[in-house]
Length: 113
Length: 104
Image 1 (cartoon, rainbow over the protein chains, first blue to last red):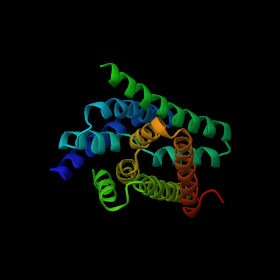
Image 2 (cartoon, rainbow over the protein chains, first blue to last red):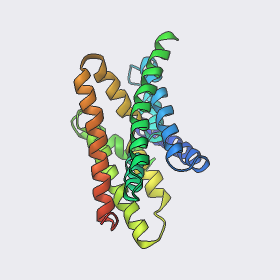
Image 3 (tube, rainbow over the protein chains, first blue to last red):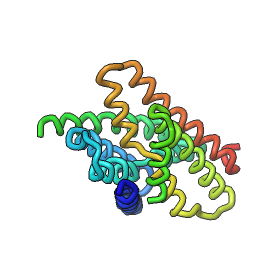
Image 4 (cartoon, each protein chain N blue to C red):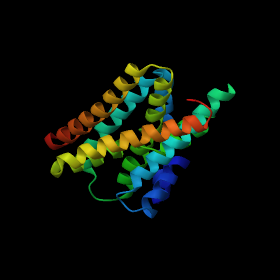
């Protein structure tokens, strides 16, 4: 059941990420995805404290696969290697700070709800 | 799907504190390599591997969540964690990129 929940959640998360990154290409798409995923994760931490298959489906499977660190890191490196240092550093700052702010906002929103 | 299952495999086998470092580090290294190789050869890397497996194997949302949990009690540790993870993945992605023939 656990493996099925992760596989299904992972599939849906990856497909949605692919869809969004096709519509909004490059850094912007991944930035939006990572921030949205972090917000939802912060929100979900309230709802799904206990480990059940729904929490695993949602947090490990879906949100885990929807957001990505490797694409973020490689986009930074690609941009840096082209000499776009300012753009690369800006992207890194926006992602890390945006992700942190988003998870905080999600957590606070969950506390209010 | 495969990436998420592999990520779960690391979650249940590696020590808790190391899980995300291993996943994001290894994933960034391999994706860097695939991307560098694709640029060098002029062929597009397979979306199945890049967006699919590696994109799902690594994760940002858990990184944010772990940072949030650390932040509640250990401000300095949370900052070191956030900066450390980001820099490590950048360096490993750059190493992969170089191994793939780019970034000479």
